Image (cartoon, rainbow, N blue to C red; front, side, top):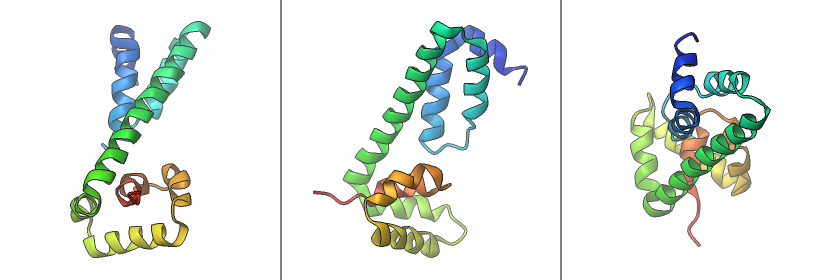
Length: 126
């Protein structure tokens, strides 16, 4: 935590943006500690900018996953699940969740670990 303070002091909102973007892009990086420390360091005026930057980073990552899912769909799902200990189960489980709940599953995908990455690849194309 001590090394996070100088990084935020030097790079500020750019560091927050990159951290949230990479975490939402499915890299195993924690963004919560960065957001908590940045919020504590920010004044009341800077706090609103911090929230805006974090939201923009999350939206940018979501749009990226949406584009990947729309363009590559099942191929991307197979590539992501190949990293799993049980690739067939990974694909089957994700497809079952999406088939059972449909697009509503995307609204809760952020709260299910791992599903956010896979849910974006199963969006139906219009």
